[in-house]
Image (cartoon, rainbow, N blue to C red; front, side, top):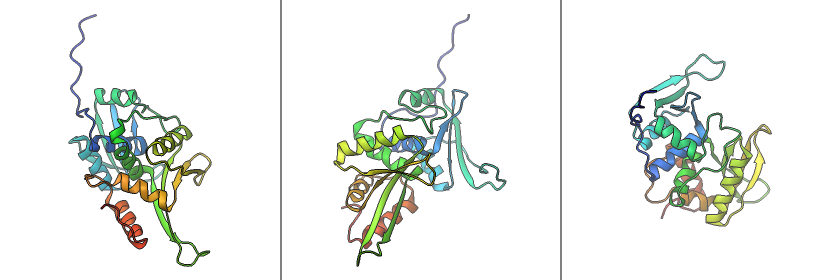
Length: 224
């Protein structure tokens, strides 16, 4: 055998930061690793989300479009690039090909957990608010994290509890194969303020606007 050449230089600078942790959250929720050992793929229905992903990782690849399963119209935006070093890094921290139902703990530095969580929320999470007809002037809202992996949902719940001492509760989504980690009003406010701290620069605008509108109706502010 001849000598191996130098390891290919990656497209992604592997260094933890708020933006980098946010991108990891997006990959766990809406991204995937190709089975070829080198390609990272991210798909979203929001072009802004795809742009945020590129910005957070500092990659310059084009944003393409693709159709959903058994569909012809190309409604989804896709970012795809090759980076062996970054691919191997993702495996090392707990992200693997075909991760949807098997992903568990992700090795995130403690100081960047809520940036990671914001990425997870922008990817697969949701927020909704409503007036409870059972109670006069009762306005409720929930922050929800979603995964097909019970192990990952349990890990998220434990990590949030360690930092904020709030429990949340786990339910199934529209199908038994999807798990939802839900936080109601007061606990939801704590999570949201932790995810959207003063220094945050990357987030999905439509979700943040929805959150800010609901908090304003409840007489609260997202940031100080």
